[in-house]
Image (cartoon, rainbow, N blue to C red; front, side, top):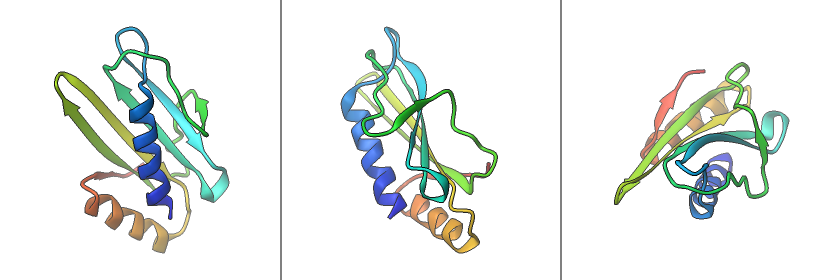
Length: 111
């Protein structure tokens, strides 16, 4: 379920446009506790940071994270890289997150 929410978050953030005048980096937290995701976004697309239903945070915490899944997109001179950080705290869930990340074309990062 977290992967579905993460994928929806990716699409929502990409669709809204993000960044400052020259693009930027920002982070959004969705949910709380072991049900949270945090998405680090880097883009060269001008616009305001928009977390949709999430909360804009200074940075996604790596401490306590299961790991992160990086997805990078580029087209026509625009680029978007997002890392979805997961916080379930259980080995079985982390293992599934890693598989889902790979199956969806992402690269898994250890915290």
